[in-house]
Amino acid sequence: MYFLYTIIASLAVFFILKWLKKRRYCTDLRRLDGKTIIITGGNSGIGKETAIALAMRGARVIIACRDPDKAEKAVREIKLKSHSLNVLHMELDLANLSSVREFCKSFLQREKKLDILVNNAGMPGVLEWTDNNFSMCFGVNHLGHFLLTNLLLPRLKECAPSRVITLTCSSYKYQKLDFQDLNYNQLPFFTYCRSKLANIYFSQEVARITEGKGVTSYAVHPGFVQSGWTCHYSILFRMLVQVIMWMFFVPCEIGAQTVIYCAVSDEAAKHSGGYFIDCRPATLRPFARDAAVAKKLWEASERLVNLA
Ligand SMILES: NC(=O)c1ccc[n+]([C@@H]2O[C@H](COP(=O)([O-])OP(=O)(O)OC[C@H]3O[C@@H](n4cnc5c(N)ncnc54)[C@H](OP(=O)(O)O)[C@@H]3O)[C@@H](O)[C@H]2O)c1
Ligand SMILES: *[C@@H]1O[C@H](CO)[C@@H](O)[C@H](O)[C@H]1NC(C)=O
Ligand SMILES: *[C@@H]1O[C@H](CO)[C@@H](O)[C@H](O)[C@H]1NC(C)=O
Image 1 (spheres, protein in one colour):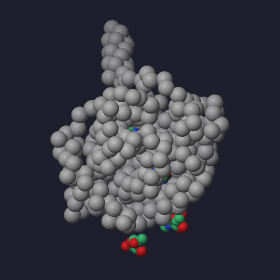
Image 2 (tube, rainbow, N blue to C red):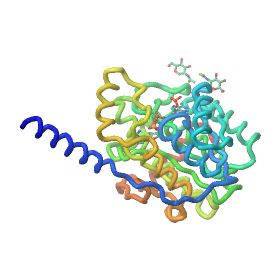
Image 3 (cartoon, helix red, strand yellow):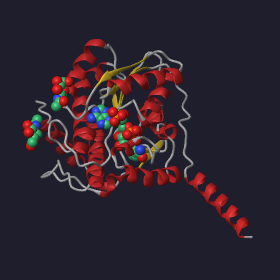
Image 4 (cartoon, rainbow, N blue to C red):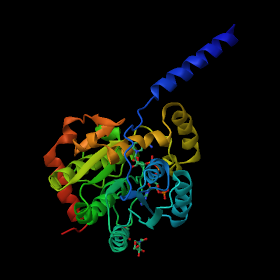
């Protein structure tokens, strides 16, 4: 009898979890022939799945990665899975602002077009510091992408209509920015939340300053995804999280859907500056829609990365 109960309970749990993890796919099948796309951190997780999907639609995909060996391996996999040879990698370390500048310089020399920039790379909450002594989350997730986008913006404008997509996280709502301490590095999870909130303000400000110039900007929460982010933690933590991820998180292929949606959809383009979850616009907490804070963060970031 207990045996039967166990089976019924297990089946129930299985189907409830399956139902909880049900997500929408991007149903817009537009092709991207002739488009050039940069995906930061395209060597793993959501970035790699995005690269496969966009290469499959005919785009020239450049993954911008810090580790050339991992990047080379990923390019091979992306080519194989997308049946496209138009995939390459370039070196970019977002934790090093000189590296960001060098990347942009060589990209702008080598490539004529840039139609879509996907600011995907990200560090989970770790209490480390970047090469420029910024807190790792704020430095990589926000400042690195801030400088990257600024340096590539002229090219994006030339190639209008073009898009900037920035990965954020729904956990933005647990923190606020402290302008006295943008490099806050106390509780790992909170440093992550703040950097993801910065991504949201950043994405809105990109939309504002490019309004009417043919560039649109999107902030995406990909859902909770079974990606490689746990590699930054101890084996014990990883084993624990692995179980939770297996139960509640979605595969990377699904995590990439809203990014793909924002890359191709006309419907998304009507909501430049918006926040997207599960292939549709979502609502932000009012504090995260504060244009004055977005502007203030933009100006503070300009000073921090030495943009005149
Ligand atoms: N997974 C989730 O549940 C979840 C939820 C909400 C939001 N997100 C966001 O989704 C994005 C993608 O993350 P993921 O889940 O796919 O994680 P992931 O598998 O860990 O991928 C992160 C990517 O970022 C790259 N990266 C990290 N630091 C970098 C640096 N300094 N310079 C250049 N690249 C760097 C990593 O490169 P290496 O391989 O060399 O480390 C890796 O390719 C992130 O922005 C994350 O915050 C994820
Ligand atoms: C930062 O990047 C530059 C340019 O790629 C490189 O010369 C420099 O050594 C890097 N700094 C560190 C601390 O790795
Ligand atoms: C970062 O801080 C360390 C130690 O505090 C220092 O040695 C290093 O020179 C600093 N690096 C930069 C780029 O300011």
